[in-house]
Image (tube, rainbow, N blue to C red; front, top):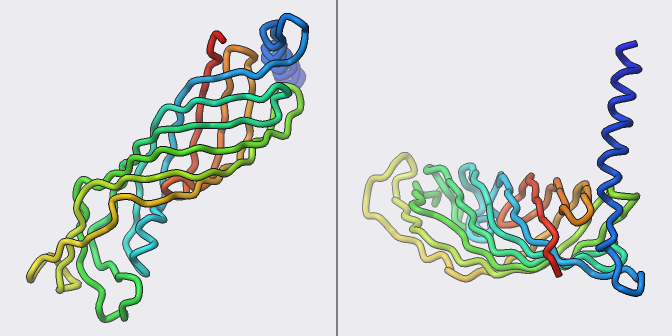
Length: 214
């Protein structure tokens, strides 16, 4: 009996949410489908920073998050999107022995990161495999990252002793973005997406957007 009630509740919830997918504003004055713009935000939890991987062969763990606004253009049929984003990534590289790319293992240095952040402007092309309001989105794109903060290393691998050496990590770095995950459309109310991918780091995150009135 309890299972039947839970099943009935799930059916009612699915029916209610699916109703949002039908909206008269999805068509123009001639009844033809039209493109739609959506504005929102995304949040990603970072697990590693590939920008640092370009300069270090071995390093401590890197954690952080990315947050920022996004503008999405949904195609007439809803099967594709162009997503523009401006993001702020706050990373927290752990102090410890880091090995620069190309160095021998004995050349590892104690390395410290202070106020390390990344600002990123990017775009993505996304294809959506749709079934009603539900879909699975897969996409990729490019971006430009601006890195702030300082990276200082010390010759003693066991701690910050000896003469400090401030590293010169390029401020401007090209980035590659990839994503995949489920998507749910609420008509003109907006779109909710859960995804994993690469964006200033390997991440798991979510985004939510709402349709603009034009």
